[in-house]
Amino acid sequence: MADTSISPRRRNGFDLEADLMPIIKGKAMLPNFEELPLETGIAHIAAGGGLVTVDGINNAKFEGSNSNWGHWARYWLKTTQGGALTGEGYVIFWDRSKGRVARFAICQHEHVNTSNPERERYGYHRGHCAKCGLDMSVDSSG
Image (cartoon, rainbow, N blue to C red; front, top):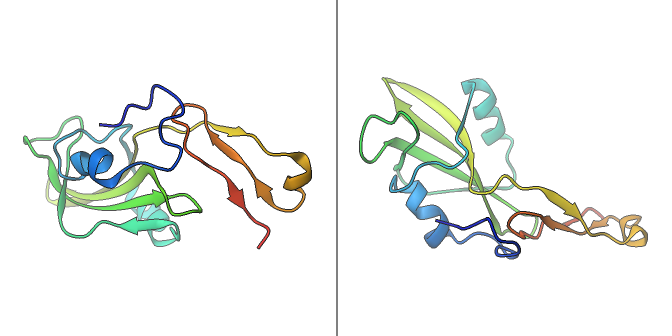
């Protein structure tokens, strides 16, 4: 599992295999698990242009899971503007004969603005996460 306690470790994003697959396969608990109302969660996924869909049926393990591997689940992972995985995502899972939805995050990012005011005028906003070092820069000049 990713160690986000020491900055800057994840400048170029989280690794799918090393950081996220243990969570997706139900071998590790969903970090910072937050269940959402079904309608809200589906709206976030439907409107999520920066989401990557994880193929196949996987597992979701969280506090209160009733099995060793969790629940059947499908995942959508968040990306930065540059396409790197942020370590965050959404999961739709089957529990107690109904579908549920939640979001999760390996790191609850804290944005640090490192922009030059002159460059900000042209739409380039540099920044990184204070906890894990993830590059959170955004270029809105295009």
